[in-house]
Image 1: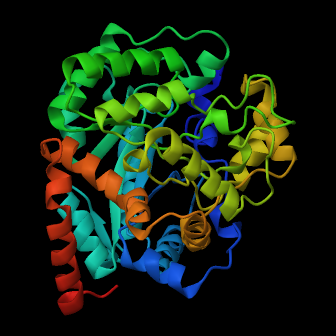
Image 2 (image 1 turned 120 degrees about the vertical axis):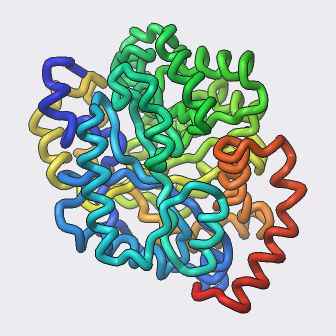
Length: 415
């Protein structure tokens, strides 16, 4: 992606590959009452990317999205504030916009600092807000800002978003054969992230840069997990008759995904239509979403898979801009071709997860397995990274926490 347009496009365009969707036109899929209740009964944590100014422009748009999510039982969302080459000022602008909107219904939101906040949001029927930055450029080459990010609730961060940065190379640069790998500065950023309990997110990252980052973590911080918060498995689509020769630049290899197992992390597939290489559905189906989950469970095990949709309220402006300025996306026309086939949306978790639940039950998944995938695995990783918990502590405490949560729900819960 050309550097000369980065600043012009940063607020509108460079967010596009994160969130090529418009959730409130997404389909609501039929599901059993049992599945709908299961979603409400369990902690469910998704991921949403919806920048102010492009994903939403009016406060009511954002608030209506979360009302529907709460009604469906979605506990919370990892929520992107910045991406690409966004700087500190843009982070502050986005943060103010989201907080100002949510301040209109303050009783409905919990800004997460610990897993207890997520549990509390679940009990009270609130939305747990877990801030994410899909770029390290917000540091503006000043590592002393890392504790400020932690204090304001940035709980996970990506090193390199698609392009080439001081930390390393993103996935679109790697797609074009220019992955420089993790830099010395990138290693310093990781060190500070670990120091302040910010989760390393490797989605959007070029393969060599991601592998180098995982090498650094394994060598220096073997007990600290790392994750892919929203990455589709390339291996699921490689044999599709219509699959492209190079695939979608956003999707990751099995080799990359398998690395999270040793660290104790997770990979969350994103239910994004244009990334389903060779399929590109007009409406991603519960079966197609369940296929992604099932693929990762078989590859990584049930303890290392999560959920993401990576959706947004409205993407009509950025889709139109992307089609008009297709040359700005150096992906061989992959993304625009997918859009032109109708794959320009993503599933809204509230509208598809109950149907996914029915599908996964039919495949033989147990309630305990789904509880891990829907939120438990993320909770375990969050506890280890944010709170410094020892490996295995979550498993030791889980049954007691579930019993306590049930008791509190029966006595005080509103969900």
